[in-house]
Length: 243
Image (cartoon, rainbow, N blue to C red; front, side, top):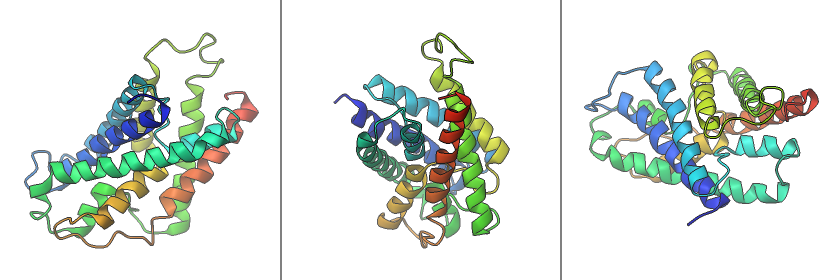
C-alpha cells in the first residue's frame, strides 16, 4: 500500500498511537510511566509528530496529518480543494484506529483507574479552566502560529534552496513540543480536528472499563478553533510571502 491517502492514514495512526499512548502511560494506574507529568507529554507529542511525518512520507504521503494543515494549504492555494475531503477522511480514520490501539495496549489498566475524566483525557483534550470563548481563542491562536511557524520552515526567506533532506520532520516535531510548552497549558493544544475528535469518537464507541461521558459539549472547540486559526495563519503566510 502506497500513496498520499494511505500516508495520511498511517501517519496519523502513528501520531495518535504515540501521542495518546504517552497520555495513557503517565495517567493510568500501575503503568510504568504513571506520574511522569506534562513535560513528558509535551516532549512525546513532539516525537509523535516526527514519527508520524516520517512514516507518512516513507509510504508516499505528504504528511499533513492534521485537517487544519490541509485546510491552511488549500486556503493558501498550495493544495487542491478537490483533494481535501479524501485527506480529511484518511486523517480521521487513522486517528480512530490509533486510539483503538492505545486502548488495546493498555487494556488491563483501564479497570485499575477509577478517574473517568483522566481516562477521557488520554483520548482527547479538555480545558484546565472551562471557559468556552477563551478556550476557543486559545486554540485559534495556537493553530494560527502552528501554521505560520511551520510553513516558515520551508519558506524561501529561511532557506532559498529548500530545507536539507530529512530535516523538516524534526523541525515540525520541535514546533509541536515548543507550542505545547508555550501555549498548551489552557487547553492541551489540540490544534487538529482529527487529533481530538477522532479519539473522542473512539472513546465513545469502545468498551473502556469504567469510562464516563465523552464531553461532547466541548468537542467543537478543538475542531472549530483550529480551523479558524489555520485559515488566519494561511492568510498571514500568503500576505507575508511565507507561502
